[in-house]
Image (cartoon, rainbow, N blue to C red):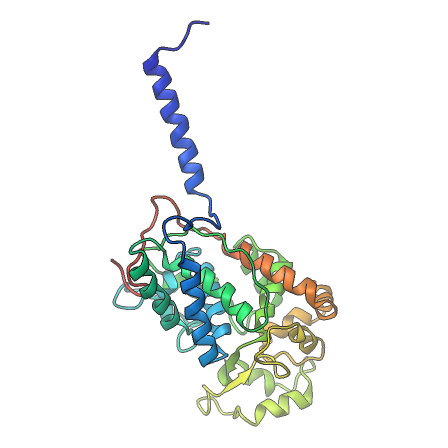
Length: 323
């Protein structure tokens, strides 16, 4: 076979190199900032710890913020864009309005990183690291965060209202919703276990505690009624812990609560209601280590949902707005 000409060899080499580069750009890596911003994770951790020490509840808010980002357009920090940045801010979605928190923690970390290494660390990566550090700060598991996401230039309220779970979601709606993001039923139950910390507003559980249904413990319902009036519009924003037993500690008591019919939200209790997820709830209740391992694994998997990498997206200088 005749030797390839030098020009043809160069073309083939260039083509193969471009494929390799495109492939590597599409991959997230724990060492993505190792040389360009080696103190990135240290700076994010400091911001998270400061916020959680000031308010323990913030740990749950930061985990939820990452979840609500990844389920809409992928893990691209679209959830952080405010109304001045986009006409369809996800903050105004029903599932987010008046309840999504932690924006100032992300902005604090971002401001520090912009002074350390301007234009390098994405807001989407800050969200991913902050969720991990928030979990660890309240006794939950830690995990290796893959990095290299870039930030979106768009957001979608419609997509948020379509893709984010509701406090009224049925088990089948949960399963379908998670499956659409590449997550299975085990991921669903594990990630729902983040409700071992955090609080919910009265309007999200009012119907459940006044339903007199067979799927709720009567004593638990009565206790919750003491701070959540039956009349809509009265005390709607009053808070109650999602886990009444250990509300500020990341553990597996949440699953015992479900078995005892003490899930605060209907969307939680459906995980133990005679359906396909009952066995997973029982398993996590009896083995906290398995739950912790599965939660960490599911968070990593969720962080892989449609990230922007390579030349896609931007690195925002301020997370709430476009450059």
